[in-house]
Amino acid sequence: MPVRYIFIRTLCRTAYWAMPMQSPLHDHIMFLEQSIQALSDRLTDPAHTADERKRIHSLIRDAELALAHYRKAFELEGRLPVDSD
Image 1 (tube, rainbow, N blue to C red):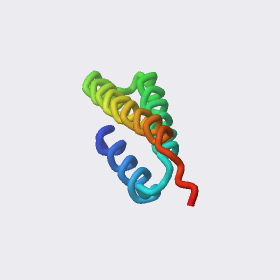
Image 2: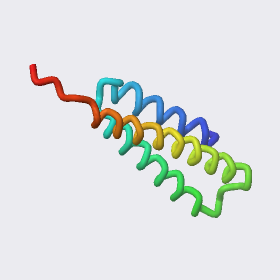
Image 3: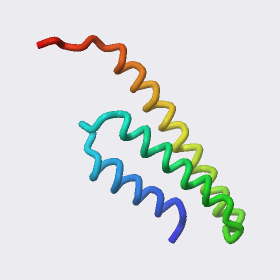
Image 4: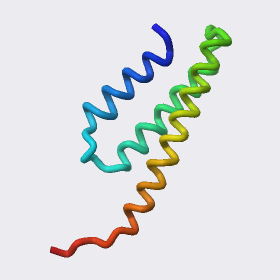
C-alpha cells in the first residue's frame, strides 16, 4: 500500500471522523505534530525506495503547512474576547 494512501486514510479517519471539527484546535495541532514525527521516523527505514522517500517528504511538507495554519488559527482564537454570558 503506498505511503501517501496510508497517511491520507489515517488522516481522514483520525482528524475528521474521530475528531469532529468542534474539537479544540489543540487536538488537531497535536495530531499533526505526531504525524510529522511518525513520517520523519519512517525516513530512517532503509527499506524505502527513493520514490517512497520523496512521497514521505511531500507528506511531511503538507503536514507542516497544515500545522502552521492550525497554529496561526490557535493564536488568533486566543485573541478573541471571551463571552461572559
